[in-house]
Image (cartoon, rainbow, N blue to C red; front, side, top):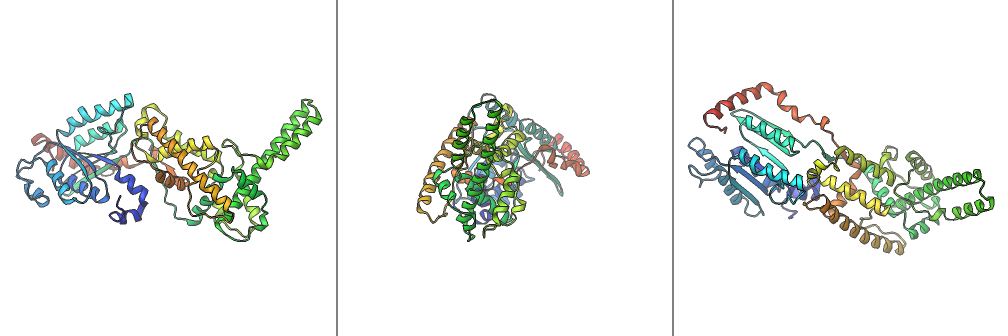
Length: 469
């Protein structure tokens, strides 16, 4: 991707979102001038995979309007072909993939597109070529728009319907019933910065060499508010908390053994061995720790240092431990029902859902978070060497998981380590919207009088010409 070409857009939502936008494919039903303008805007935004379905031709009433865009067009030229030629000629420097098909839009959608879609859903076959469509944009008469909208809702397809007559028009956006995620725009730098240190700490706290190094450091020795000191401080806090919890468990185990009349000497020996191994205890992803205790412990230990984590009191508890992170992912997965057989097709179209699947697998397999960071240098060169090695290993592990999950969930869109890193760093800002929270399906009712006027007009036009311009 040429970053300079889309520099303005990248400044709004970043390279990753721009690449995802550019990988989308859109199906148009209809070839009016409204569709032409929409296509032009999408091309300027970087979307270059477009398919236009229509069999209408240019007549005397609209020849003048089409000539304003493409002067070489003539009477009885197919509108979709005129739009295709216009877009190719005006975007010669862009690698475009536009396909215009001369066919009745309604018949094509029912007899070709939906049939292929049903085969993909039934047999889980490769949908990459024929039905790899992210959004359907329908600009037919109102009656046909409503019919297409109902079919898209039934088959879980994103659809936008639109139409206009003179100064009256409407646009209705229907999202899929499930799997609607977005990244909440939280511009609070201090809130986000805590998670930067927190994620690094959770990715390193099971490395023996780092544990040994941290164990030798006193809390009072953190006198400089450096990045590396904050990371080491959090690692030390987490290890101490988990070790305390493990010690409590050992005490309970020993008490139970005493109740069962197990040899006292053996108990003492086991207890001593457990206590000696406390500092070597590896944290498991299923380990459950009270997050309030963690925050309280961190706040108390911060008083012994010169470190600061602004807005620490506002940190969400659900992201503080591996187990909590897994629970959040599970909650999102249940909400979106991504393991439901009937919705497997929708999974393959959602980058955030796919990220959650990969993220969960990595945590469960490795019992830590991936280390994917650059430009973090510790004073101990040995630690820097360990971090570089872990980063390389984690990237390779993620690539393997991504490849496996792509096959399992028929995910054919680009999903690189760069994408994973982006979603990973914004994981705490991912939000899920349930269908009952989406009100846009009722927009037409808010403008019922205009809609009724347009609907009545479209029915009259349909009887005469079966068309609306």
